[in-house]
Amino acid sequence: MIDSKFLRQNIENVSSNLLKKNYELDKEYFLKVDSDRKNLISETEELQNKKNLLSKEIGVLKLKKLDTSTLSKEVENINSVLKNKQDALILSEEKYYDFMLNIPNILDDRVPLGKSSDDNSVINYSDNDDLTKISNKGFSDHSVVGKSLGLYDHDIASSISGSRFSLLFGSLAQLHRALGSFMVDTHINSHKYTEVNVPLLVNNDSLTCTGQLPKFKDDLFEIKNKKDFFLIPTAEVPLTNIFQNKIFSEEELPIYYTSLSTCFRSEAGSYGKDTKGLIRQHQFDKVELVHAVTPESSDESLNLLIKHAEKILNLLELPYRKVLLCSGDTGFSASITYDLEVWMPSQKAYREISSCSNFTDFQARRLHAKYKNKVSKKKEYIHTINGSGLAVGRTLAAIIENYQNENGEIEIPDVLRPYMNNMKRIESN
RNA sequence: GGAGAGGUGGCUGAGUGGUCGAAAGCGGCACCCUGCUAAGGUGUUAUACGGGUAACUGUAUCGAGGGUUCGAAUCCCUCUCUCUCCGCCA
Image (cartoon, protein in one colour):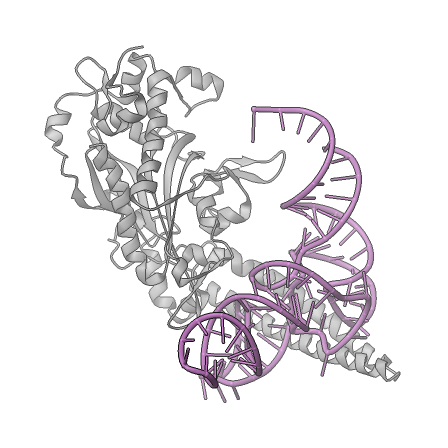
């Protein structure tokens, strides 16, 4: 959520900023809802004050055994007016939050103007991205390779669950598991993260705090019969919600959390896209990185987080590039987002494998997550940063495609071999 | 799933209808005292929102939501979470 006071005072600037995210701010509506709410608040508070004073007076009179009926009547009168005001206030607050919770985060000035991913700007390529060499080999799609090895299946998965699910067998399943472990190990050993094992089912509030709700309910799987649970679309949700209602001392920050978790997305609106393979599944594993930091350090912290994610790609020797998302492609809650895109030889294209964002105080305001500023001695909202480090399914797909040899086998990257009983390649089943 | 107990400030914990936003202790902070340390003394110390340059001030909050009452931490109802015992279970 953005700061309503800031919005009120900078409404023109904010509104033109949000327009870059294709959000049209209804300025008049906001000003009206905002001032209605404020007026109702002060009106009800005034009445409550009167009521409190009179009630106290009644208490004093009762002690002295004096008559209180006149005052009681008066309070009763106030109560009936107050009730109306309070009802109006509840409605007004609902309107206000409905509106505020649907306003996206303000964009960082560095975000380039643009409509879609076509307008994203490439920052740099990895050192090993000699793609002419790779792409000329005519490598097959990872799902084809996996199938011909007899280690990947899509059809049976469909009959078990439906579309956008898959089965991995044998050493391919093992490689998938190895990848998750390798990523988490790297982050906890080299990057000072605390590993967290998180709930995969979360409640409505948690999703509201991180910004998936109320706006993006369609993208989530909801569990209805037992309780109002949602399956997490990313470990960002439980990890970030660890900070809810916290007030940190400055010494406690930064906090780095990482978690390997399964993620669930409905992929509504992406019918027909990436229907084969591991790229777009209803269920996938991902290693998530989350930072809680002070506002001054959030910019630097995002860069650090990106380096942590890049480290995995570098260790796996996968070609990739770093992209700064344009305004139209930047997510609802983010102020700035960098994607890491890995080279997929079969598609002759870079595909997103990590998305790293600074959410500034947007999530913190919803979470009520603050820290005590040592200098100002005031409680200020923290900043939250997160990114994937990395999406495991997509990384596996990238490895299959980039590491296949002439025989259709998959060479196992050096760093993963210790996790695979020192196996060197995956051969046909 | 069955039976019971309980949720009060950073923590421990008192408070069963009226200056209770809440005693006391611990912790934190500030100052004082002692040559240093240890100990001691005094004061201060919740959060959100609103008004005010500020000192300050108003409202709400004692798990959440309703209700009773002129007045609720305290009484009633519903929900929720935690703990203990039994059962079941990876």
